[in-house]
Image (tube, rainbow, N blue to C red; front, top):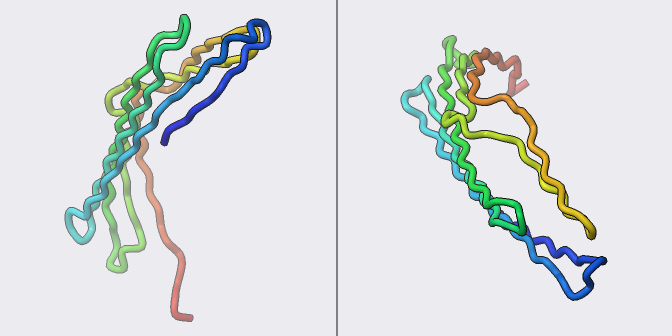
Length: 125
């Protein structure tokens, strides 16, 4: 995904800024056995330097492993590792006609989710 923003400066009419950022996201899912599956997802974000704002490059890697249980395969235990590289951060830049504001927030870093899902659906009725 590619984003382009055009900012017109009302205080200095002769200055127009073109801002762009890129996001690349790829995932792969593998069925290791009839009951075991693996998923990996990489997301790369890039925002070039703009005025006093530094260039930003961010790589997020999420992994999951799931195991189906019961004879009918309706139950599933899963384990998810989000932000395996522990590189996540939440930063927001606001551009207005007279100022640029950059804010950085604390977010959860690397974390693991363990869960169970059961499918109650019955088809063919």
